[in-house]
Image 1: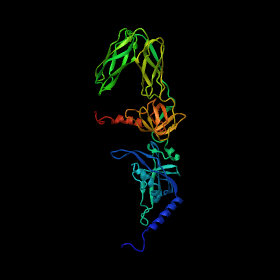
Image 2 (image 1 turned 90 degrees about the vertical axis):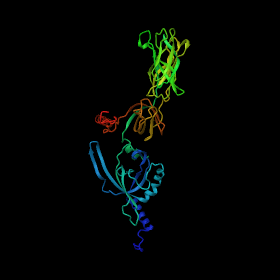
Image 3 (image 1 turned 30 degrees about the horizontal axis):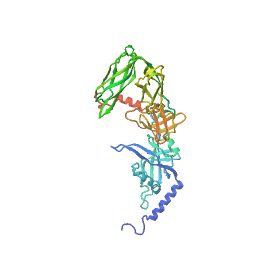
Image 4 (image 1 turned 90 degrees about the horizontal axis):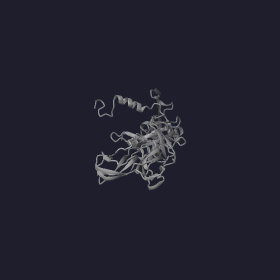
Amino acid sequence: MALNPFFLQGSPSEQRLVQDLINEQLKIYGVEVTYIPRKFVRKQTIIEEIQSSKFDDNYAIEAYVQTYEGYSGAGDILTKFGMSLRDELTIIISKERFEDFISPFLAADEGGEEITLSTRPREGDLVYFPLGQRIFEVKFVEHEQPFYQLGKNYVYEIKCELFEYEDEVIDTTIEEIDTQVQDQGYISTLLLTGVGRTATATATIGTGYIRKIFLNNDGYGYSTAPIVSISTSPTGNPNNDAFGIARITNKGGSFSVRDIILGNSGIGYTTPPIITISGGGGVGASATCSIETQSNGIIKFIITDGGVGYTTVPVVNINGSISIGQTAVGIASLGLNQNISAINISNSGIGYTITPTVTINNPSILTGVGNYQFNEIIIGSNSQTRARVKEWDFDTKILKVSFVGIAATTPGFFAGEIIVGSASSARYSVVSYNQMDLYDKYSQNNEIEGEGDLIVDFSESNPFGSF
């Protein structure tokens, strides 16, 4: 035997004594810090790059400040992008305390692949240092100093750098920590309204109009709605010309024309005009119409206010004095901003003695409800744009958000759409949306990208050539 058999060289009882002494010293001379583990929300699948991470747990643990003379590192540096703080901090925590009071909770999350390592502190985790009220990021964990006293290691020496925020989700439920990043990162602004608005419209009546269009043949093979051409009005005024809109439907896997509605019924027609259907990738559709030259019918609808908050097509009500005849039928169309963009005519009606009044049903939301919660996901009901709440002011209805993702076909939030909170279920309508970051004077990403594209445009297949 190489070692002296009369000395234990580190018995379990000796190791236990050293660990207890270290734990006691840390509780006496240490500082209570908050350990915040990093969770991986999304990784890039090719090179395993972390695309999104969050910090939503917190664990209080005692730590000894190794850099007792103050923060180490390069200190404060003035750069062209503002002040850069390069402070560093080294702390020592008990290995046993971490493994007994933090590791079990991290191991529970490890099964969901949010935590990749739970047995020791990890590089990338955060430490909140209360004396300076600062958040530090763990850069290196030394677990072999002191070097195997009595055959065992008892502490972790954690080297930290001041945390630089990059749109990570920090929601520890500790206000003094969460508020430090509330105004950090890329922030855009939504001005919301708590009140929806009912659309309004008026009608115009006259004679010599197309009362109804009859579809003689619905055709086949259409990929898009065909163009409907109607011969001009004898009055010679282009405003009196009728125009129609074709709507297609799927029948047995082939699209055909379902019906033709009118955007304008026309004025002054004395004989039924000729209707021509062309384009759309199909063939065979044909239509005729009937006209009315004696009694008044609705010629067109004029939108006076498109309203706010429409998520489904509302019913259009037409009320007016009819001698002998039939009430007209209007069909509303939704605009991109959840408003009413137009009212088309399915049937122009007949027999109006006075101009009828037009009323449109209320939108699905007339009054905003609820309060958005910090860090919750909000979703635009029309654009499907997703963002994370930074700050919500109920009095001014200003919502500050950081982006999570934008739908590929939309540039962001639409004015008029409903913003729904995924956790709070708050619902308000968008008045305006400012994509620019108004709170960071150094945020000039769009300008930098625009100037860069003038040099090398990577949207081209060959940015270095002419193709």
